[in-house]
Length: 387
Image (cartoon, rainbow, N blue to C red; front, side, top):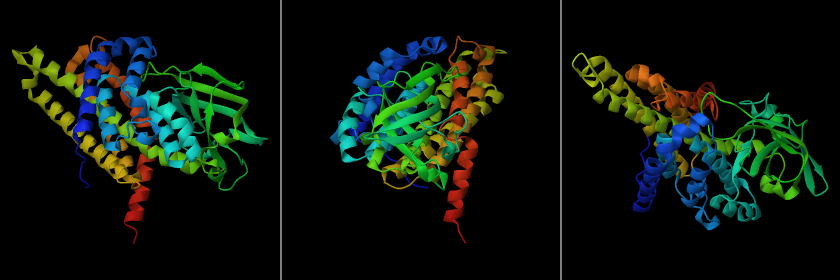
């Protein structure tokens, strides 16, 4: 197993600042905002001031230039307070990473400083009603018309779809291309022109308080210069390159939510008494707490291993897939065990455990389901152990 990155003094200070932000600003309001399904405008402004919208954007473009290892730790800390906040960051920074990695120099100079400041808040418009994990089945098209493209189609489950103002839109510039993925291009689309409608906000089990929308494009014009990388047919490769970051993010989220659930459970177990002693002294509860903590620590190490490999400039499909698979499945198990430790109180809105329980399934589904992760893992293992 690869080593785990250690933080330098500057990164440790940043992480300490985030921890204070979570304790003082996020935790006191998270459950109330979540239950109202209210967009956290104030917390978003605070995250902008902290520079989080530029967390992994290179310093030469106005970002913090943090390593993926530090970024993963920050995401974990924020999720100890409220997982939805990291969704607002993830789609934005995944888009920014794609621009930094695949965009033209003009696109980087134009887009990244405004994204780093939070002036431009981005989302990834990839999923469609009939195309989720099978990206090449998207039907949205982008037709060249003079010095612009006209985009038509619909997008589903788009984070930052309403409150964001710039979107990475995947569309087919060659609908007849074979293989199908070779006809996909990616565009940095800014809102404002007619032809883009946020048709509805999608109600969800958990993951509330942020905008998850359905979008409709009807002859929406975007300049030819918005084609990321300046070359058609590169969209699939660009999206796949960005998903490594997305999977590290979601895995780190799962660790943070699980840690929060565990902390609620062990605190309650030391305060609640049954049969004349705190329930933490009952063996049945101790076994649960031991399993919970072990799963969390194993998940954390997998996430940090994947992030470190990404920091070293290597592909980390295997490591990110393992981290995302194990951490997300463990998070759901830990959240349910926390509810069992709290008993009836865990089922009420008086404690945040019910929120953690509702948020946990998102990590199993988001950025590729657990089943997709297993396929990614197996394919990489077969390459590594090829006879």
